[in-house]
Length: 316
Image 1: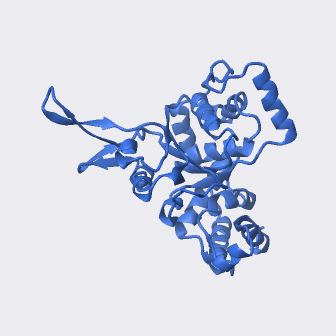
Image 2: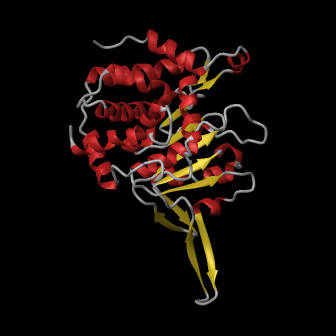
Image 3: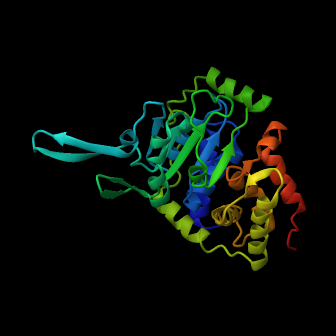
C-alpha cells in the first residue's frame, strides 16, 4: 500500500471520531475527492451532514466554508463581487466563500435558479468569472451540496443540467438503534460538534497526499469488457419504460471515474464489474428522470436501477 493510500484510508478513522456510522457516505466523499467530482448529499435534518463535511475537511487539513442557501441569496454572495475602495477610487474584487477547498452548499434547493447557476462554472471549470475576469479556485476544490428529501415547499428543484454536474448523489439515512445510542452516549460525555479538535479529529493527510492519490487513481486499469459493461448499463437506462430521461455519456464517464477511485481505495490496480455495481446507484440516480405515470405509481428510481443491474449481463 502506498503512503497516499494509507493516509486516505486513515481519514475514515478520524471522521468516525466525530460522526457515528455513515461509512458509505464517507467513502463516497473520498471517491469524489479522488475523482475531482462533486457530491449531492440528501438526508433529513439532523443526520450530521454538516458535521461530516467539517470532519472530513479537518482530517484532510483542507479549508472549508459553509453557505446557507436561502431565497434571497445572490450570486455575488457565493462567487464574490467588486467592491468600491474609496481610498484608491477603484473597484477591488472581494472573494466569496466559493474560494475554498470544500464548499458546503447547505440546502442548495432553497435558492433561486440564478444563484444555483452561479456554481455551474465553479463546478465545471474550477474558476469564477466576475466582470469579465476569470479567477481560479484553490486546488483541490469540491462542492458538497445538501438537500432535504421530504420538504419541498419553497424550494427550487435543481435542473438536470446542474444535477449532471454532481459526480455522486449520496443518501444519508437515519442511524441504526445502536449507532443512535452511541451518538447520545458521546453527547452525554460532553461531545461538542463545534469542537472537532476536542473530539480528537486530527489531520492525517493533506493536499500533497491527495494529489499523489489522484495520480495513482489515474493509473488504475480498466479492461475493455468492463468498459463495455459500463456502456451497456448506461444504454439500458435510456430504454427503461419507467424513465423519460436516461443517462448521458457524461454519466458513463462518471461511473468510470468513481469505480477507478473505489478500486484504488480497495487496494486494487484494476476495476472489476463489482466496482461498477457498487457505484452505479450513487452515480446514476440523479441523472435519470421518471415518467409522470411512474411517479404516480410510487416507483423508486433506485429500484429501477437495481433491476437494470440484475438484467444487464456481467462480464466474466
